[in-house]
Amino acid sequence: MNHLATSKEDILAASRELIKENGWAAVSIRAVASRCSVSAGTIYNYYESKAVLLSDTIESIWHEIFFHSQDEQVFDDVTTCILWIYERLQYGNKQFPGFFSLHSFGFMREERTDGKKRMMQTWGHILNGLCDVLKNDSKIRPNVFDQQFTEKQFADILFSLMLVSMIRQDYDPSQIVMLINKTLY
Image (tube, rainbow, N blue to C red; front, side, top):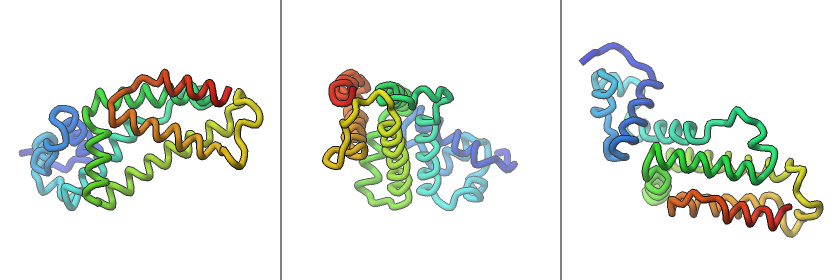
């Protein structure tokens, strides 16, 4: 073993690779240490437990999947934004098979507060982004939104449909785009 210090970034990269290759069960302190060519103790210098390591790994996976697009036009209108989100969901499913369903169900069922909190923060970020796009899309018909039907309510509907897509592993956004077009434009 090479007992040289590594970095959190290296540890997270190793954890993500293990998940890509063999799923959640492959991640252990020893497996990550082996992948990084360091001792398990070195990993414990960065992470006090497997649960904390997994929590940070999950956050880094969400970040990889939804890393902010360099193309700001993605956020100019709702349809383009939804197409980008579904493209990223498909990428995430391909890179990390089963991530969405296992992550969501695992943290909700086991009440792991830190992981659940991070997942909810990520989901909140996506939901807030949808609200912003809905508020700023200049192509939306006037008077679509009012006190009875708000941007937030429609964003909640879109987000719920995205969650169902993740569970079903169905990343075809065509029906959602049709709903958007008939409702908003």
